[in-house]
Structure formats: C-alpha cells, structure tokens
Length: 153
Image (cartoon, rainbow, N blue to C red; front, top):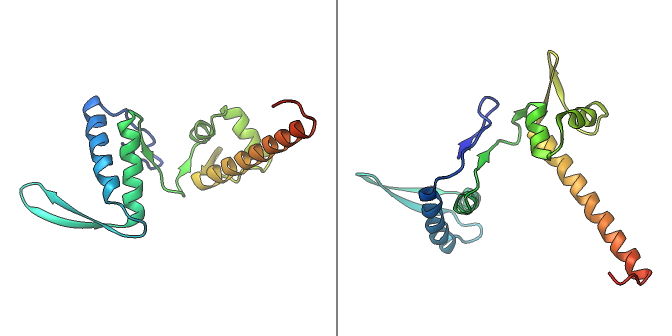
C-alpha cells in the first residue's frame, strides 16, 4: 500500500502473508465498526498506547483491508492530487491521446505547467461519475424501450 503524491503514484501487490493478515483483521475490525462512532485501538509494541480513529477513517481502513485480503494493490490519493495525463488516463481506463482530446475540448478541467497538462484527481473522478450516470440512464432507457416493444429482454 502506498500513499501517493505527485512524485509517488505506485502501489504494490500484497504478499500472501499480508492478504491473510488483512483477511483476519478486516473481519475483526468490521465487527467493531458502528456508524458515526470513532474507534479506539490499543497498540502494543513494547508499550501499550490507545489511539482513537475517526469513524470515516476506520471505514476506509476496513476497505483497504478487504482489498488487500483479495490480493489487490491499493493506492491512496488526496482529492487535489495533481495527475499527469497518463495517470489520469489510467484511472479512466482510456488512452492518453483520448484523454488529451477530452481536456482540450473542455470536458475535463486541467492546467498547464510549461507544455505539460496537469489534472486534479477530483476533476477526473467527477467526470467518471458523470459518464457512469449517463451510461446508467442510457441503459435504463434501452430497457424501457425493449419492454415497450415486448422484445423479450
């Protein structure tokens, strides 16, 4: 797991030992989470210390553990992380030239540093959310039309 900044946009696949430990930890953690309540953890590494984790952070930790238990790599990015066009294209699962067309057409906000385009993660995620919503609406419309026409779907 890596907390990514502009200079650190990489992650690693968890080892089998990490996945097993994450599986056990996620089960225990999930049984202690309650909506809106902070979580108190006791750390034992020679000296005992209790820390309190905000409820939202505890939910994020649970999500991370679940992904690690499934063997998936994790990368954390702040919403205002600046991405290169390749990083943004990777998140959207599109080619870099296609992303550049989206940027140049004004569909996604960006800024230039010299000759390089930079995109905020926030803007990429907003664009992804809007196209996902449009896809769902189009699928709903197709389903309605097929029902109206009694196409048997």
